[in-house]
Length: 139
Image (cartoon, rainbow, N blue to C red; front, side):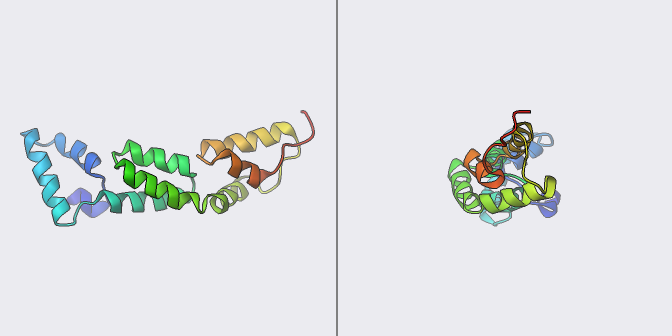
């Protein structure tokens, strides 16, 4: 209960944590079922909460990857990806503005800015929309 009171957890994440303390691993699934039945544990609620927190700094690909790594069901990940894709351009612009503030003047600077946004999980078409066409200088 302490872990659930601190923040939302996915079912798989909580199962991993509980496995360290359980005398019998077979006791964990019924406990998780009971927590789910009592609406104290919800993968959908976890996915929404985590996606909202991540979406401030990351693109759809990164958000989806993070949710998958925490054991969230593919259906929930797909739903969240669709929702975050709708605002990806606005979020990418905000992240880019916070970091760079000015458009790249050279190809080297364009590549640096593009790599930054790509590492944050933003799609290439979104990156091009945010920082424009490649710089004309080849340095």
